[in-house]
Length: 307
Length: 317
Image 1 (cartoon, one colour):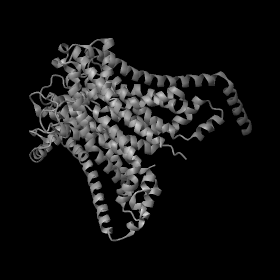
Image 2 (spheres, each protein chain N blue to C red):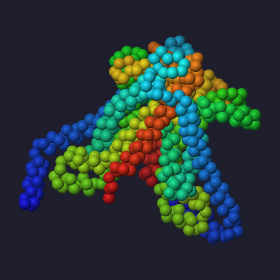
Image 3 (cartoon, rainbow over the protein chains, first blue to last red):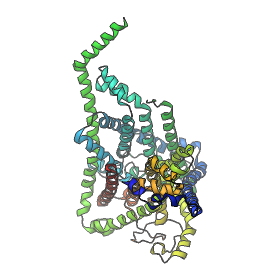
């Protein structure tokens, strides 16, 4: 279809006009202009990335100190105090979300790739697509509505945040795991079957180990995607100044909401609060970058060569 | 000796094949996989059911009981307008840049650099939205103030730039540009994939006929990638519609319904309004916010479905 329209374009229909050198300089000039424009647009698109990394580093460093990582913000006004409660909260909330999402996501992908057929398979493929489009704030509202019905209005718990994040994480895990399982060559499975290995053992001992590096990479990238989520946690885990590492009791702080809150309600000592917000942002960006880089290294180092 | 071993192994395997243990293992494992699949569907159904059941009271409530004393429709309409406006700006800014970035990576940059450059673009997608928000209000906003002034003075006759220009940069235009940066990677990634798959014979054929690189791109790469770019743009739009924190932080809101992009008075967006009001709300106000979330869900769903439909139709061809 597309190729047909290409061959009908007038320039291609008359190759002699292309080869004629009379108007050649104009076409070359246009080629050069467009090349410069495209390269310029790419550079323009990169400016925010450079500016962002530079500004976050520059503004984040003044707020970083040992205290920032070791103490919480209980009773702190102005300078001092830290975000240890937010760091612990981020780890707990994300950890619980991963503990929910990874088994469901990978088993879901195994279903799609190894077992699935008929209506259930089609429904799952379709609704995973729908799920990838759920806005993060809507996932938060869902978790709130779910827990509110059972535990009453105004409820805020760490685990609510984990449920909200799971709604966002499951489709990412299932998509990446499905991609990885798909490229495990069929002859490996057939070789195992030929030896009489049952299907489940083939999956556990042949398919999953072959895909292992890709699965780990996918999970790490999924974690990197949700670890900085703010909106769903704002409506589920609440804001709190002191340490709480129990996801089933009381409000729980996390780095993203901490950064937002220090910006939103800086109190009298504005600069001190802003410094802490930027320090939290820098910590968050470091975690995300680290996860991304390690994920790529894992893949490069441990991926199974598939012939 | 070894031959005997092999035979015994094969014998054991055959025995196992007909035995109950293998079937039990298979049954347990395949059931677990089905349970995971059903759980995911149930989760999504749960999202819809709980949002509807908690949002429903707001649909039927009297105007006097709802926030701002308006009926639900009057309450959500300006927010929906703001949501669509901000996302439209984002798409208009992001799509050309994303196409250019994808072309640069696939056809202009040295092939050795392509992977690294693609990785840089993808990094933009990895940055958490709260950080975009802080960057928008502390860095881009102040930097945009003189530009907004210039737009008001020189282009003030266009309704978009009517002014008065904001002195803080907390305007719809700045919020839209930050959203554009956030959705650029997804649009660009989809375009990149399509451009890279342009059949070689088309590209080489065009160049063999003497086409310059730009002519080759215009005649083969762009037509080939057109529908992918359209669906990528719509997926990006869906992303922008639901984006919360950057808009929450950057936009100064007044509830005004206006196309004026550079002033201090802006409509809020559905997502930003939830993030701002939810922590301090109770009672029916919570139901109203959940109901607006449902409206947002519906809008993004329609956008994403349309994008998938474009992809599906293209795969058919």
